[in-house]
Length: 433
Image 1 (tube, one colour):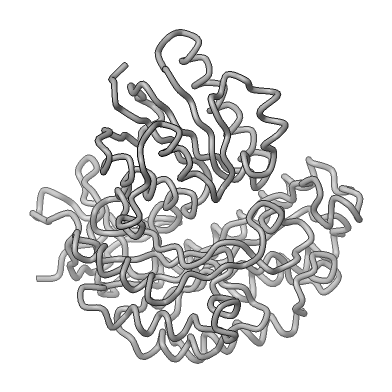
Image 2 (cartoon, rainbow, N blue to C red; image 1 turned 180 degrees about the vertical axis):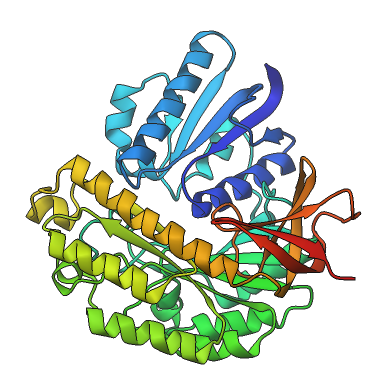
């Protein structure tokens, strides 16, 4: 157990990761050593940043807290703090159920940990972070909260109303990140498309991305978590005209059958969804579309699921994830619907949907053989350099493998490669001299 050493464990989404990175920078500035490795903790203080989105995430967070409680009981840890979404949602219950934790914080008051440890928050460092990602890319959080009322989602319960960051603050943060070597930015929010309305009374995502793309040193901007309703089409012009705005859009659609969209309270119809996707592809030729879909929402029939399968087969998403409905307390669905799709049916539907996507992905990837792409090198792994194209976000998308014995490449640098082989979820490439 190392003194003045803090282990910060970040669970859940990349938005949580940004919070952890901000906190790590603050602790470094006041004299602590910090680590971000749950497998090898060795500090005298631990902070667990929890997720409370769905059942599996909550279970993972609880198990991690209990694991560190055991370390404390064994004398391997002096102090344990818990923050994040799970703590925000179940603060009082957790205090009673897990008294071994020194203090619980919500999602937005975590800076109080610094004071409780006996140090002072550094306001001058509020836009700085200790990156846990490779130094060439970073996540860029532009807002908190969500104003949507989707039936299944607990995020608004946890995080409250949508709260945009000011454009100038985001620009300053990007400039600082560029100064420490960041070239690629994953722009994240619970809902990108709503950005700016709460403070500017107008949707400002297109202006924000345009201004960020003007910053010298920004090589790639990639957009995550758009919402289909009231989609800001002005964003497509920016994507089409700016070379450093990736032709990539992560837009969670959840379902396609009108009965399901209505039950989910998505405020969009099947026809409007098809029209939206057609327009996006028309205005940004070659765009990579990523989506997330849900199976097993209360009331989902075989006919609804068949429409969803047909949708996936028609649209042929470049990247797709899916998950089973989780009945989350106090959500609209929990209060108004019966969770009437059996778990085994949910799992079977999920497996069938992902099998369809696996076949689509394989065929789409085969069509990429022979193409030449700009890629960034993320890491070395075995006999390969592992790279990504503008069409692939870290951790969740395709990777491109380049043989090491034929090349000497630098992590974090860009190269042009030719795709020579494709599998369902990976490419192989060779450097273009």
